[in-house]
Length: 541
Image 1 (tube, helix red, strand yellow):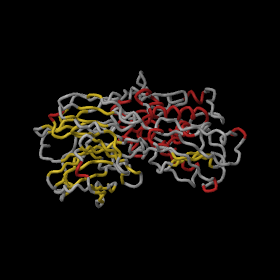
Image 2: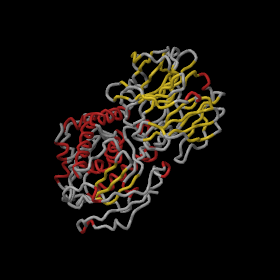
Image 3: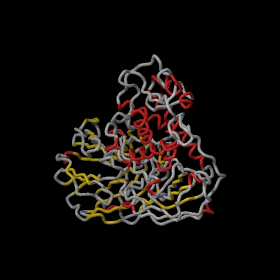
Image 4: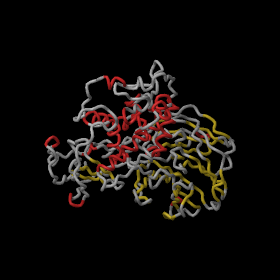
């Protein structure tokens, strides 16, 4: 359980008076207790930056027509104009969900906003539709337009006819608005920086996207619920987004009052400041999560927790699903997997769920894509032939585009296969030489920056790390982690504790060992024995 020591703060306006000093909630178990991270912590108010007091936020942030207290105005002629007249004469048919997903992914990447959150907002705004059943652009009573439902002055900042007819441009504009709300949230407390990579810091930008007042409060809380459980709450699009284990302010403190300012940092420090006075209300250490790394959790079922797969000597494949307290009883994933001379887990379609690649004895590479919400695989599909010459294969997101690429070692030469975003790979690019003494390579993301790093073991049993120099598709000079790694027969990475960093698992005979990645250190804790019943498992992935 997390505990807080709220600081003494100047009283805000009477309408915002709260007994926050007396009510400090235990952090909810979901996403917190299984990690062991939460601990009692406090920060003296005097040590925190306190900019000048602010006035009440504008009620109409997103072009919504709201009263000062955040309630919807009575419909009027001005409201009724809506998007009907603005999109007059424009008709069309909805693109496929796959096309909408691609547009949202591209828009999120262009504006450096969380794609998972942008997809949730689009679902809440339009249920992923640009046009209604009659072929007219989707509209609401406030004049929202299309996929992202931009309204009023917000829409006027863009090409309105194009917003009406072009779903990809609509997605781009919505992502641009969300990025602007990030800037607003940062400006709320300008003297205390926000870490853009942490999903926890996107709570207020999501709220501001909708507007102000009580309607926006309900909007963002529902959006956070959708983020955490898309399979249950957004089944129509669940295949396109994985669960995001976000820690929300309501999980941290009882009586959290939107829109108090939130700041989460990579070391797990979570702070809440009063919106008006900027006084520090509470701080604690909790689990925080990087949105650009969540898809790398090696997650079979899309619940945001890292799972494992294991193949036994009879060619049977089993799933070991992480239930938050450890690996649950294994579940069979079929027979016939013994035909593959190499098996590796990947995420070939960037949907946040673990897929599998298998190379058979003839050198053909096959892909198994995971079905949304089930953890089971679709029928295999051929990737291509000519893969038999490689001694090592590993999945790694070398270029940081969220689609896992491949590195393949042929003797001393390393080759790079870029994921082409169509469940396949571009032609090999000669990546480097001098890898003759390496007998095992393993893709990971040690620093959780969204760019794949590499672990490599040499024939003397020494383990090295190669940190990705992001944006270059190249690694920094290798660093030695340690010796004694030669005894392990199989390795796998997965985010076991849900902190957004890929941890390392290693099998030595029947013993499965766990090495937790230390955030900010690019290193591992001492090993912990998870189980001694893995004798019949020949490969973990």
